[in-house]
Image (tube, rainbow over all chains, first blue to last red; front, side):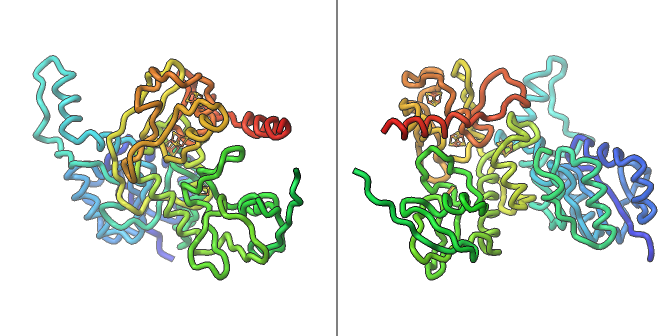
Length: 177
Length: 239
Ligand code: SF4
Ligand code: SF4
Ligand code: SF4
Ligand code: FES
């Protein structure tokens, strides 16, 4: 049996879900005996590759760049996993939504700044109107709630997926776990 | 004068059970260890059938009926666990989550919230309808308590406990449909309420993080409900 190709991507999240992924410690060895990590913020690769079996997505979809990225990732992935509460529900990034992007930028870059207050417009991708859970933008196959999901949860979910089983996530984790 | 109580026999999920004629399907199910999920219902308060989580199927009845307000009847055949019911219950939860702003990871009751744990129990791992992200106020004007409308599911437990048990009737519901909101007195800040006795009963019956006590760490924000069955029992004994 050929090794499965796993990727992880990081949208609008705090990287906590990736930290929890690393927390699998020695079980990472077990995972990567059955799979290759073909793309991730943890490895140095510029392009998201074609034909990925499983992609874990951390973070909400918050910017133009996130939108572009997640659509491409979806196209190139068999099983897309919303990885952690920000990806599943919008979570903390979505707390700006009731106020609107403008109000939040004003507050962060103008009202609370004394030296050259200005909203950044270059280099940083523009925020979209609302931070959205991943499945409101593209189809998601598996949802792993948790902020962050525990290493145990991630390991069990991955073990199932690598064995071509659909994990029963509600048994393992919940929103805010 | 005491009327003789009549006993009704019925079937729940194929099991023969019996209950008093004034009991609800939910009560009889619970006495028999049959789990029906509930949110607005709380033993000791008048059931109102608001959340629809407890919907059950009854043979020969085309509508689904809420178990918490439906009385048992002779020969009834009740089903509590069908695929269809599971689907509707998850949908009810999804709508509750989508209507307000539930950010569990930063919520004051994370880990001891009835809405959150119900989602887990019923296997709801995401919300399939678009979130509304409404802009809602938090009223912290009361000396000891806070109401955060972002987390309210309009179960009206607060309204009922304050009215039926405390006798203050500080809480009520204002507005209609999606715009409904719980209010204190005549929509005044809670801290300016003339009727609130600061007893804290509403805070303790609230299933979510919508009502909480100030200045307590999350780990101590467990809701204390023991007083309710106790008070109800004492009152019934005195009658
Ligand atoms: S009230 Fe419950 S469901 Fe809502 S955010 Fe708080 S913990 Fe989560
Ligand atoms: S603290 Fe007591 S009196 Fe005040 S609103 Fe709550 S239940 Fe009513
Ligand atoms: S404040 Fe709490 S008890 Fe009152 S209606 Fe909202 S969720 Fe229910
Ligand atoms: S518990 Fe029956 S409708 Fe809410």
